[in-house]
Length: 149
Image (cartoon, rainbow, N blue to C red; front, side, top):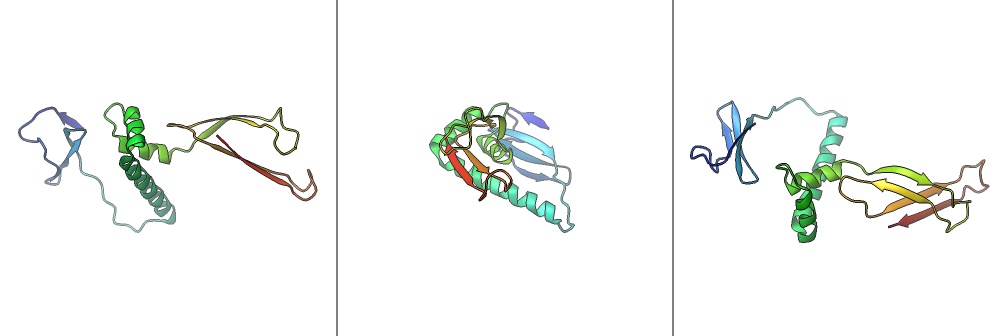
């Protein structure tokens, strides 16, 4: 991908140039890129699911851009030419992960502590824990659920 700082020919241009490449403006810079490949075949169910997830990520990112506090936080994470929009989409598309579950303080009684070490590309605001007892463990299949911050 070619980049220019100040070029009278491409400054503020965007769109397709012939059937070879497109001009785009990214972070105030004019970028020349290859034409996107368009496929006319009908999408499979899996492709449709990916497209829906991507559309949801795009919607999430657009909402972030409307919130000044969140926009500021995502702008801080936007490095190496990435936009806050791209960082927000990536955050939506990448699932958080659990590094560790510590059940040493849990003996099966409500209110006992289960420590969870979780992470995310952006930040973790809450963790939900749900314990479901199997039929062989506890009669009546007791369920306990908790939301922690």
